[in-house]
Image (tube, rainbow, N blue to C red):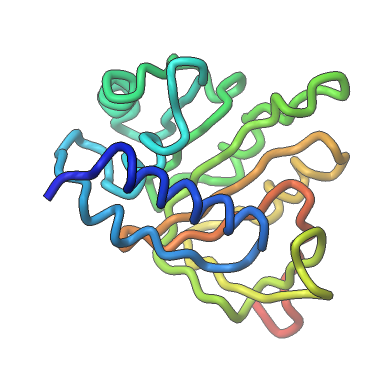
Length: 197
């Protein structure tokens, strides 16, 4: 079965909007991920998000060992324009072992005149749990919530450093191979839960 570019992508988009509206809430993109019937050299969950978020008016970058071929595939399917991570609107990081802090540091945080130019960074995760190591506060969260993102290497320090001067900053989406996803908008304050790693 292949993905329906209208109904399935609308469904995925609604789930992403829900994830951004309620930071720390885990959404299941698995049904849509499993309908990706293309082998384009990029993990299906990232291809789904590219199809959902990109169009001919957006810019994107892939940071991975296979970035060149993955960017070509995404550009062919979405008509989005390839750009450097420093200027791209969307930055995809499919490699679970890649230094996420370094990628986050390089991404655009926008400017005071144009804070909307801050990037959305989509990062691969081994697992996402709706309880655990991270405490979240901010818009869309009643008092606080917790979640855990299982991923090699640090990323929280880089994300928090990038978002230290609101409205500048980056939005971050983590997604697993099974399609579980969580969003951390720049307005969300994230700290390690007491007793966490």
